[in-house]
View (tube, helix red, strand yellow):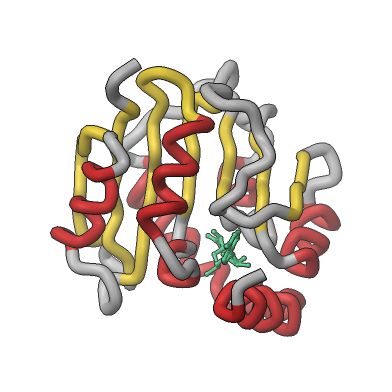
Length: 181
Ligand SMILES: C[S@@+](CC[C@H](N)C(=O)[O-])C[C@H]1O[C@@H](n2cnc3c(N)ncnc32)[C@H](O)[C@@H]1O
């Protein structure tokens, strides 16, 4: 594993038990703003990339059954699995997702890509596992990513951008659709 990824995993492994206490309110604010823009249907298969402790599952409650959560940090996933025993938690690097192509209706990747060495590669990897016309929901820290940068990454991965906006807290957010299928 490259040094940066190793460091990131070590950092999240070490702080996993504190994550929810520290970030629950912040992440819930982001989810509220994002999911007021987009519908999710119970028939959909959804992947939360870099889903950490499964805060997104806390937010969704029992409304959606097919939500998979993957993350590079085993300890973050362990926290999630303790809360959501019925869901699938998978330890995986976002650049090498262990799923078939064209399988997910939606892929959600919230507050993750500032941690990866090559965000373009990550977004291309997400493209490959999304179904035709599948939806990407991506956010990144606004202090590190401008709206034009995140737009460019999304477009270069062959998505069409449906909405790109600054959340009220920390992140730039984009909703995009898989093209060319
Ligand atoms: C700020 S947390 C966000 C967690 C979750 N998305 C949320 O909204 O609470 C960033 C997460 O990205 C994960 N992560 C960082 N690099 C990753 C990679 N290369 N592959 C998969 N997960 C990664 C971290 O382990 C951490 O759980």
